[in-house]
Image 1 (cartoon, rainbow, N blue to C red):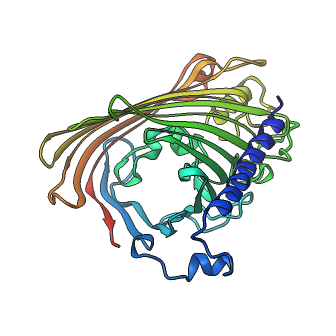
Image 2 (cartoon, one colour; image 1 turned 180 degrees about the vertical axis):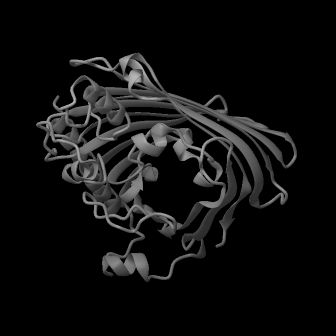
Length: 407
């Protein structure tokens, strides 16, 4: 089955299942008064108090960051400043809006959505026992990453997989099915990237190298969320197929596993992604530099056939009430094993580790004082290393975080 057949089959499944199940609901839901306009039934009818639940949250984190090497200056930074409103208008209709105060409000060229908007979506539940639901609008990519799923207030440093490689918040249509209390499956049809191909070419200044933007620059996530062993092991696994440049298909697999115990929390995320065209532009700069060393007339392009893989481990331990130790390790590698003058296996590595201490002074508030040390290094191997130097970052940070449920 070709990429486009997979894409349109997933879209047809999502829309078709929603329409079919919605008809079933109308036939069996005698409580609904269809004589009223649809908008009035959702927005203005008096509803029981339990159906009017609205939450207003503020996600805040600030820290003093002190570089231990290099010429970077120390500074007090606003790491996180987001607010969200979410809730339900009826028992079957939920909504979520989340906005970042320290991101650009300029709209992207593909989805016409600002980078400051994380979520702007609605979810409608339907079918027998309301096991089916459909989510439409700006939403999170349903990729198997507990690092990404963690509340961003609590995640101090991210891997390149989350920070640069993945289109995290995107316009999409997601069909969800709740198998039981412990397992659910999801199909998400989404934009591959939030800016179109021509914009990306213009921003990088790269030569097109015969590439054109896809007529359907979209993709499909197929995901499974599960809870095993008395809900101690949480799984989040996904497969994605997408296209960005015309005729160039990308594949990725992400396997997220999280352990939840009384005093311990830990996750291990494993991921591999094959990009026919490196539109995420992580590996391309170093490959272009290498190609230019072989041929001074070479013009920079997006690298072809790049494979990324990563492993991210985080462990949190509450050793006494209110005190926590946190540690995180990141290993990521890029490979290029096809083509002339290929860069080779693991030619670029990103390695990071973090160790920190947290104190929660108020028992029933999500407020913490923290301090941590973070080290990050990019290393180059093979022939590419001759023209690309390793880089390193050492940093100490101390600050406060506060997740405020204001309403």
